[in-house]
Image 1 (cartoon, helix red, strand yellow):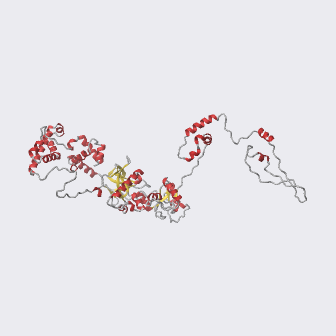
Image 2 (tube, rainbow, N blue to C red):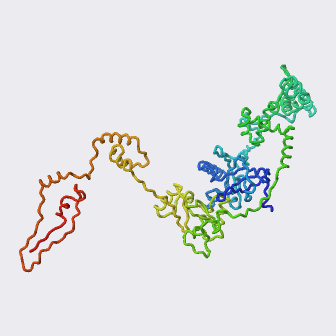
Length: 594
């Protein structure tokens, strides 16, 4: 019952997607809508996966600075697995608020400011425990140190100087030290001091009666007397006594100089009614973040003035009234809400009933014998091959899956329990791969952002990209021949990343095409006219084939004509055969015997 009861101030998991990790939020308010549903106004926390790589580098730099100054376990003493899981426990606080349905709550967690005196291993030993040290602004994409951090450590300790000996001079610069403003061992009694303070209040009341602006703000005598009784008047009176060595006659003469009585005002009197309304509005929006109050609401006021006004404003009736109104409003709001345990099946569960094919990512160990070998794939995180429930993880085309334990870790911490191959290469400076070609190939794939998935074997298979075919048009081929001087294919091939000036090639092609329009290019495979061939044959008559004759003999066989292997010579102008081949001179060799 207590585990399902959620109150204001609790850190909880919210689920906005069935496949993405949980959102981590802090409940600020619980409001009931007109339809009867409960909505939670929450403060947003962000994970490392939610911010850019540039900001992650800044966060890592800040973490290294903290490790150098702390005396606890440093990151170098951790294993690769602990370093990997520690990044999942780091969050970034934000000033962003949002409203989410309370029915999307999936459990409680714990978020604390990073304690520099504790070891980082304490966060890994506890379940559902996170830490933060930086504040993330999603609107301007910046990271800042949390202003509310507890300053614990040697860098925040005061340096106590050694005690001076008798007769030893103080070599410190006195102008940078504190100034003495009161001596408790004064010759005046407490009664005399109180009487002087009454005189100072009376002078302050009279001065406000003479001042026009003060008479408008405090029209009655009671209001002027109350304003004159504030601390600023008492501090001025006591400082006057000290500066005049506690001489009452001399101090009273200073309270009423020749120009008139001295009027001392504090921030409560200096601020106008409109400025006070702006301050209350800013305080409602930003709380005690005085830098944001000054930047967005009161830029003409100094930070010291705003802080002084805040602590004086807390002593007024206005603050008491607002505090009572907030208390009454808080009584009318919900203080807690009961959310039952979410028991609906996740759409990413792999089973035969959820519409996903069991032959792809089904559980191992069932009686069904799959024909698809992908069924026996191991968990992408812990490489386990058996689990009571499997969940599909990642892009659908990757066909990856997680076991029940790793799926719960993914939902809570936003990452895999075990570091992947690409992350191991980042953590370890020297890879352990023996084959340099395999090592360079895997690292190159990881640098290009290609997914590396596990197939159940010790060596992970890299998913190759889809091949493509580049078809060149006839005009492109023709431009290569015409614009050789401008294109320079050999030099362009040596610099594949330098773009080619298509405008210059197009202009040269247009000029060359205009020149060649009257005289088209001669093709290498054009046929010569028949008259040229006949003239060539008349000048160069063909030789007769050599016929070998032998003497007749009774033992000689009859005349035989033997075929020889055809001679595949080069082609000529007569189509696809040269002249001798065309006339059949080299095609056959006759052997005559008597």
